[in-house]
Length: 200
Length: 251
Image 1 (tube, each protein chain N blue to C red):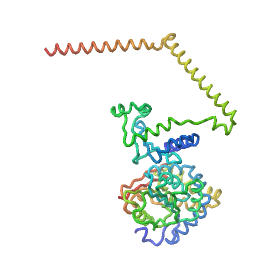
Image 2 (cartoon, rainbow over the protein chains, first blue to last red; image 1 turned 135 degrees about the vertical axis):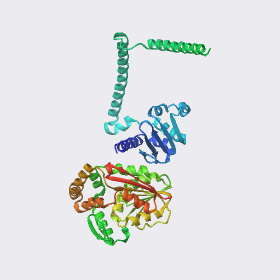
Image 3 (spheres, chains in turn orange, purple; image 1 turned 90 degrees about the horizontal axis):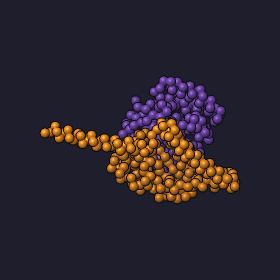
Image 4 (spheres, helix red, strand yellow; image 1 turned 90 degrees about the vertical axis):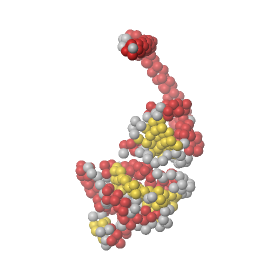
């Protein structure tokens, strides 16, 4: 039941996004009544998404025939943003795909084009000037926090690598890897020699 | 002895003449129709929406389907089905009670759902449709109020298309003793009080609690579906078996 509750909440979010971006509905028009089922292997759950022309419907525990059925782990699904990896993932059996691939691609395209005009939406409550100021403030907070996290990251790296010497430098790691590879090759050569000697 | 051969039937914990049950149930629903939705939310703490979502996910309803939402009451399932079947499909909201149908019709019209919904007052025991004419039938929290459940199941089987399915969402029996005790206390003490406070009608809600206890358990209902001709019958318990979703196919 908890899963169903979470899926209901996700459906509500999707439908809110649909109201907030009018172009979202236009981009979904050709997908009306097409069902995309996604089986997440890590959770052994199948979710189905369909757009009815008015709203989204999202279901869990879906056992029906879908227009496009994708089965993969969460890690694989995140790789799917790049369409060129599709064939490789199918060959590696990391991804199972049945039905019409265009349905999955069209849904993915529509979601990536989702662009909610937040100042416009917020202006109803705060007025134009208020909404614009709030958005500018949010953007500056976002860029400042990104910069801060970059600085923190580099400081932490320096501290751990150079000052405290808790972790090794990437160059040291690369050198270690090269040494290991060489050792592996030598061991293989030695193994071959021993085999040859034994074979005599 | 088969249900249909008996002269009396249950009405909650009371035993009444078979011909009286329909009108007594009708009185209950005439009485609660106006406050039906708010009481559903209050009584189930909103969980009835999740039970219904699960039924829709299992229904397999697609564009172009003809769906019968039997005992559809105020149209919760119909609202979703209407969107799923699209312009080429049709949803029939059927209920024996005209007060419930009126409330359902007003609610769905307010939601802007008009083009593909029909409202028909009907008795589940003698459905007014030709053989093999419906793709999916759902009956949510309605079967326990039907006088002759066997006849109703046979009637549903008759009108389903081959490949069609029936979904029955209904209160059932929980197998957890602790949950059962809490549930009994809630049903017989709190529920009628809530009914009295919100809908000014404690008797109807006492009937609701009693009728749930008199309804066949999961396995009995499954075998009744099989007796009516349904195949691949199965059920899934929800909220510890307080509610069960039965599913059966016609081939």
